[in-house]
Length: 362
Image (cartoon, rainbow, N blue to C red; front, side):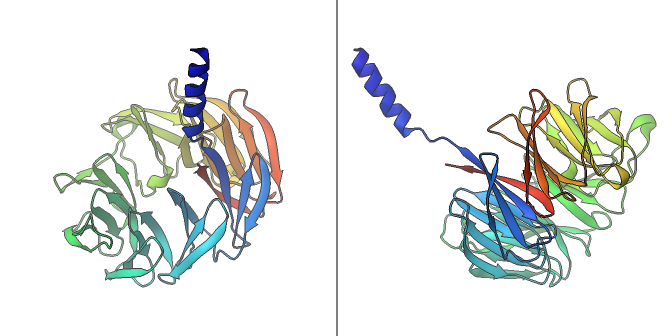
């Protein structure tokens, strides 16, 4: 019987797949991606075009990168080999990956491109506007038209087919001035506005639009909330960096104000830990080198770190109790161990690092 149990256990163990994290770090000035494995710099992927604000995403075993000068690159994260590339425009700002497509929001030629997963062009949808905040929900692609103050919803009319067929399904006009960024939360598309003092919400099940005004202490209205990439939503709270103020604003999930957390500088980026217990905050200006850690239960700052250069990005590991921090001026990535909050590694020779992206290798 013991032998049987041992054999069954071994068979089960052999069928299990363990994820292993591989870290890809944008090198802004060298058009490259640095690769970190097992806390070591193991290689670089050169010639990735203009990596100023380069973004990397993963879907299954595929990696995709979008460069500021309008290239989409498809690569194998395991072998680190480029598989294909396609230039959609002179300037692209965002992209999403669907089951059988890649959709790219373009700035300069004012369009949205639908490509196959292998980057063959399928459709170019002209909008007459810079396009931002592109997201996916079910069979829809949603994006905002910055110059036209509208949200556009595309629908795939062949969701089970091999080749997608997206057409305009609905548009929401006059949503407020200069939509700038967006996020998906459940069935809601939330769009931030650069000028109008509100944000917009599209219910993607009912296809209804509503405007939401955010207030803080003493019913004071937040000036603007354009960048949703800087928000953190987790558990029962929403954390929003104040624009032009040394605060992180805390709301409940219905956007009812809870409190302001006073911070050391002007917050730029907030990032929740995988267990939602902590939030890391980065800053601009004189406080660029500072990272503060907020306890999301007590809403108090519990840790502070200051580095020898600008902190441009950070990322929590899902595999280990690590926080990866890119120090742009001194060409390194720091690893904090988040149980002890001690620095366990400084990985050198990463040139002008900014964005950090994690691939969970199977």
